Length: 162
Image 1 (cartoon, rainbow, N blue to C red):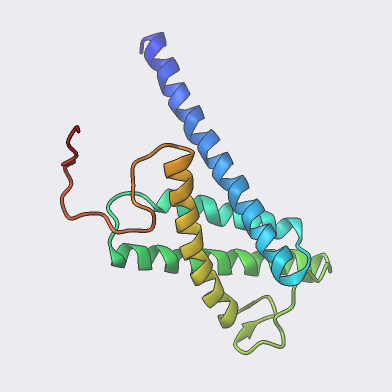
Image 2 (image 1 turned 90 degrees about the vertical axis):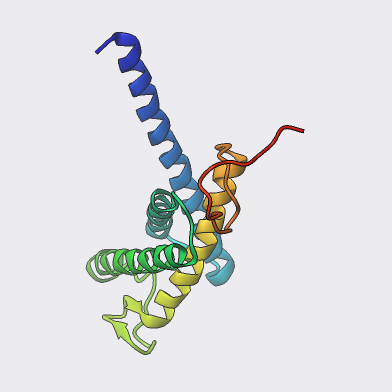
C-alpha cells in the first residue's frame, strides 16, 4: 500500500476517533448537566454512562431515517442505558457503597439499581440524544441531514443551483 494512501486511511481513522471523543464529551457533559439540574448533583460514573450512550446513539444514527428506525434507535438506546445503569449501580452503589442512586422504593425495580420508570425516561432522553447528535452533525461536523426529521423516500439529491 502506498504511503500516501496509508496516511490517508490513518487520517480517516483518527478523524473517526476524534469525532467519537467529541460526541462522548457532549453526552457526558449533557447528561451530567441534566442530573445537576434535576437532582442538584451528579457523579462521574453518570457522566461516563451519558458519554457511552451518546456514542451508541451517534453510531446508530446513520443511514436513511424512518419512523420505525427512530423508534428502534430509541428502544436500543434505552435498553443500553438501563443495562449500563444496572452494571454501574452494582459496582458503584453496591460494591463500593457510594449510594449515588437508589430505586428500591420505585415500583418494578431490580435490586434498587434500575426500574421501569427510569427506563422510560431513558427512552425519552434518547430522542433528545438523537436530536443533539443531529445538531452536532449539522453544525459542527458539517454533515447534510435533517434535524430529527425523516429521510425523503428518494435517495438521490435534487438540489439545484440558484
